[in-house]
Figure 1 (cartoon, rainbow, N blue to C red):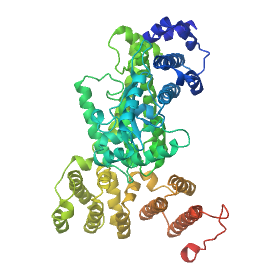
Figure 2 (figure 1 turned 90 degrees about the vertical axis):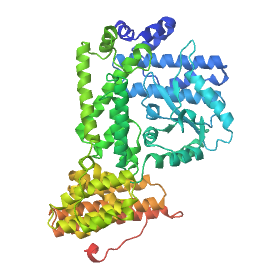
Figure 3 (figure 1 turned 90 degrees about the horizontal axis):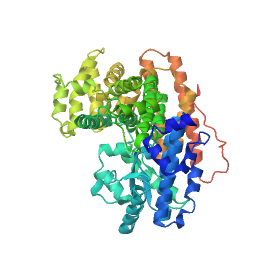
Figure 4 (figure 1 turned 60 degrees about the horizontal axis):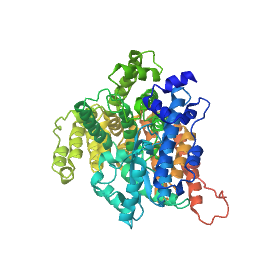
Length: 601
């Protein structure tokens, strides 16, 4: 116990809290388990009958207990990052719901944003909230409820505060209504929503609503409004350029405010890890529901498993995230302040080094530097300016290109799309020159670019990933059918990003599992179910085409693979169709599909 007391009193906040309320010493007993949701609920039991002062005191004193016990377990090495963040996030959610019960207004939907939405709350963090209601028919009453809720959590009393509340992420920020109706939120997203707001809403999670049994449907209704704004149905590579610009603004602000030693915003800091994870989520989350997950570490793991991020990069980023978040917590343990900057004075440096288990400040700083350099390296790999966008070269002399440049289709392109188109044409011509018939390849490539010109995301994909442009050029140079196929189905361009996937032998078990998982995620939306089957079939067909053109398959082997693909698609589609029949008399159909011709053979 004395060693733990020494560690806990490295925190000036803990020393003051224990001196003011000696009974809190029970919370730093090393035998105490993690603060559970049940314990929090028990501490809040009976609060409905509290007067306002008593209720505020109850909330604040619960926070003191949770923070002290969590801090003690963390510094003793008994709590990992997930436990620390989970305890603080759970406290915030329970406090919000308890406050709404006390206010007799449980129908207001409080949307947790940022780290609270992801269940990753800091030990001394603001909570970013947005208030919404399905109809907001009584806006003045709901606004009063919202303001009282903020005061219950945010106001500093003799017992401190519960959570600082930040409402600036709501539509129109500080100048917007405190509570938005669903219709108003949707109209804002469609007409006013900006790129950085997609990033902000990626972790949005409703933490309150109506009484149990009704809230679920309203939360689903809200998700149906938010999801199309955050996640596009196509591969959204245009978001990388937008995120690159947003990060450049952050970097300029960091330099202006001299925040190089800021573990959150500084170079190689927490924000850059979040940018990597969330940018790749925004690119692909519309097509892969798994990638709409909220917690950063879970997203990094998914990105590695799905081969959207190298495994070593994901591991180094995850290790850096845990290290930096632990440093962030220790900075905040000092004074229960929302601190992110490394201390400049020797005393606090010594306290921080001891709390991190380092022998000295110099040892701590060396370890920190290794992680920050790794983050910077991986950040630059994801957000590096692509070659096709960085060097604008003149278009080659060609009658087809001359007529294209004067066409209305080209002239009416948005500025960003035209800039990418202008950069892609010479890059395409250069790649076509290396094929057996450069003229035919260039013509097929121009057909493809014209077909995708109105879809900024596809132009962005080829501009962001020059290797994809080179691979598609080789394919369309080798086969006019391949050129026609990819022009009709530009979603397949994504298949060109990774040679390991494009040219690896099919894993039919994994293909079937992925198809079934995507169908399950599509629910009962028949059009979406049909699109899922088409997209999975086209993608696998395209991989087989690439392998055939590369000379990796014999005629017999290709026929076997195409037949296996057809068998799986038929089987899974039959089951999906049967599930759509409302009054089916049995769970499994007694129904056969008989293959004739080449599939039968």
